[in-house]
Figure 1 (tube, rainbow, N blue to C red):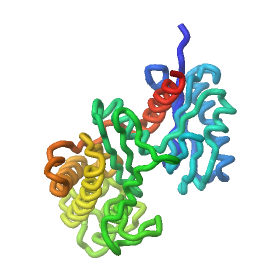
Figure 2 (figure 1 turned 180 degrees about the vertical axis):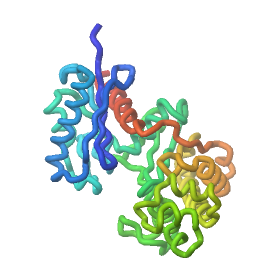
Figure 3 (figure 1 turned 60 degrees about the vertical axis):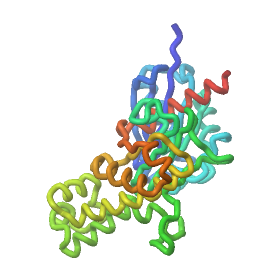
Figure 4 (figure 1 turned 90 degrees about the vertical axis):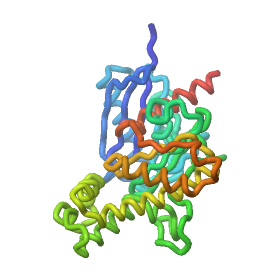
Length: 326
């Protein structure tokens, strides 16, 4: 019996990840390569092709056996034309990812924003399985957002959307990387939390964090923040709870617009302190929404691990390619 095989990419982070799956989305192989130090989009696309070839070789699968490829991209995409519009961390802009991969592998390629892919994976296989409308919020360096409604990722007319991290929440607040002031991610991202707890450590208000990490922002990881709270750094806990409060404010805005039944919180910060984040975000959101919505949603931590983005990209590719074939 002929078997279809599927491949997926996650282009976020410091390494690009390619994985190969069978038609039931059982992972068969995996390959990684550095994204840092590349020489632009052209070199990056060559690395993508090479990385997928390595994953196919490991699985013992030929190119012609691929039924499709899903690509999760760290930035806005044009899904209709298969173009990665902008990926600041990669230095790519208007990159024709679909065209290059389809030329190389002769298989249909579907692009999706990486947060959308992660949320779709949670909808299909994780903590939001069976939801009618799910919104995902992922506080990290920024704050990623995505939504699935009736089995479909919500996308804009010409690009991916749900840039939740840039909802304005504080008039004349801190400057954001986008150039505006008071965006949600200036108040609730890991970068904002890291800067605040670094100052607390410098001032002597977080002795456990200071002993573990010093005051260098690059050393203050999510796990270390959680350990400092557990050890008794009350100033660190207050900072994280305030960030979660602001994320709850942003969540309330989204609830008023979409009335989701499930809010999924993910990323390293949430993984390190799930109870704190879920409790604070849910309480704040319920305090801020119309009475009709207060008991109509639940906030849950993401269930799936680091491979969720790749898995979501492949599941979405399967869905889109099947719909096109019909």
